Image (cartoon, rainbow, N blue to C red; front, side):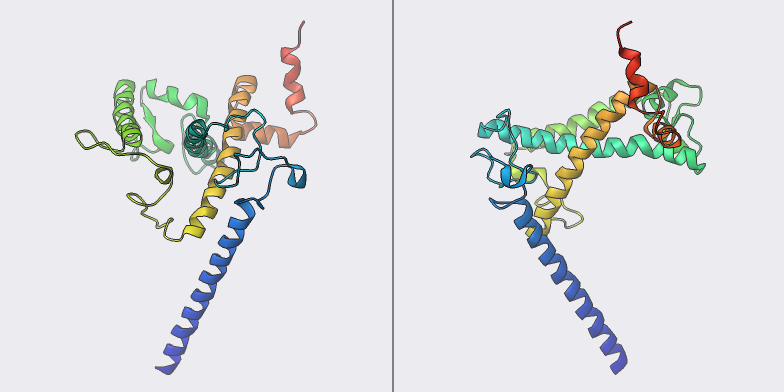
Length: 253
């Protein structure tokens, strides 16, 4: 009995120390990425505009074009950036996952390349999500488009008006961009310090994902291949298979 009690107490102490360590790390992240002493894009040589005070996540003091000078415009851009960042993270994952599964042989996907996959819906057997008809078996493009319009229309309508059809309109605020209030099944907003750190991680990863998607678009146009195939081709012969190989395709003749 006493041994079990001691073990239970020890586990509680370990959990408490871990929680305290996570709390301390989150507080350090706040001071590192928020406020006047935050990290900036040129370090001590950064001359940040007066309106970039480090109040929001991802503020590195860089706005040479003055896009954020107007508060209302800045608010719209923040919302647009977060939404595009989330879509880009989902998009990059969706672009590489089918290729990885196909190359590993763990899934039989008819067309794993992201910009060709949609055409599978016009084939005789239709489009199977991740190669499995048990997940999503799409055979009618009109039905797919109709479902997307209805589902996305409802979600976007709620985001903009803060109400479902037939309800009283609300007012969207800065907090509506992040977990908390009405929707937070994982409890990400329970601790404000942790949430502040997660906001920074999200926008940093989201910005990287947006650049990745741009790279995927350019690769698709130039090489006609998916990102994973392009990566393996480059790694096989990096000195030959690179951007310079395709740059000559666009030189004047």
